[in-house]
Image 1 (cartoon, one colour):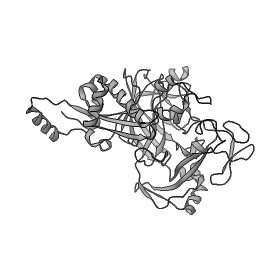
Image 2 (cartoon, helix red, strand yellow):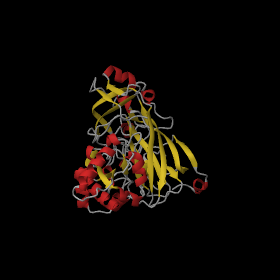
Image 3 (tube, one colour):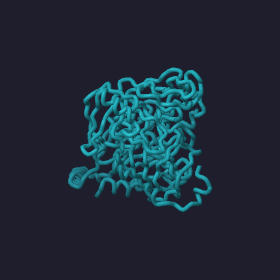
Image 4 (cartoon, one colour):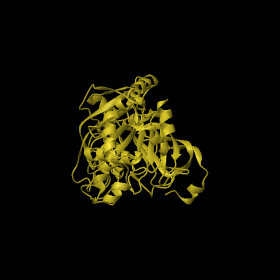
Length: 441
């Protein structure tokens, strides 16, 4: 919780956030701010996933920015987070499928890292050279990275052209020798850049850049590793053999699903996040250059970013998890808003049967769970609760006006649906939806 001094300080209209957690967030998190309702946060984010994963002293799978307290945000409210801008700072990234190394962790390689020889938790380390054995225990010299990269690659970026391409081993190793510069790590970041691995198993593959934030949201109501703030990764904390274990009730109700890896959380999108601690604790991190739905490899192109997010408090909107108003082009076809010419056709056709069509607006509800089926069911339940209808009606509406999309394997989905505008009016979300999609009925 923020200190008394922080709570008494005058709210700011803009906060530059260039400091980081050590991989753990929750009620005990020190917060910056407070930020005035309607203000902006400029997050200087560090790469998520691989860099923090291989850094022995970081106690989570990411390195997110210090949470920011929002003036007037209380438990039971929500905050609207509009992504105003995402600027990629890194010139390269390295990613691959991971495999944990036995002996280098207790229970969870993302969280409880240890030296396999000294048995010291979160051991101090040194970096010697490049490659997968470069990170070594400061005390005994043993390689201590808890992960190996299996089939990995190094990708360089052309920011103006909006493209990236994977490079050969010679180039990857040149980049590895200047990894900190190529990754443009923020000055306060403590991670070792994954570029030091110099991986080049896939060469000459181009891709388009669509930057987004894999972590954006509010702190959970229990102290947990940042990468586990969603019910799929969070599932592994239930009864875990380390100090960040939680119980099933905490897993079910105290997380905020701030870690979605949803590629639609990009410039122009509006995320509605639940407030589960006083001040909300808005944080960001885990920026990516691109990602296909599902993040099939488990990781994607982690980059440093400068990301600007505006924040508004929505009073008395109690949510179990986040909602999203993505860009129109990121909505599935059936969920896209009705335009004037189309709607006139609908009205004329409905009139033939004595029906008045109900005005609708697109909305996405995140569902999370230990696996995709559980996540979809969770999404249906959350949508039903939000709109005040039955789960069966939700499933029908999603089938004919939306879709279920996989944000991340193993268990984050986006349930898209055309929601009745009257329902959104009751929730205080109608004006936001109308503005986001330029709705005219």
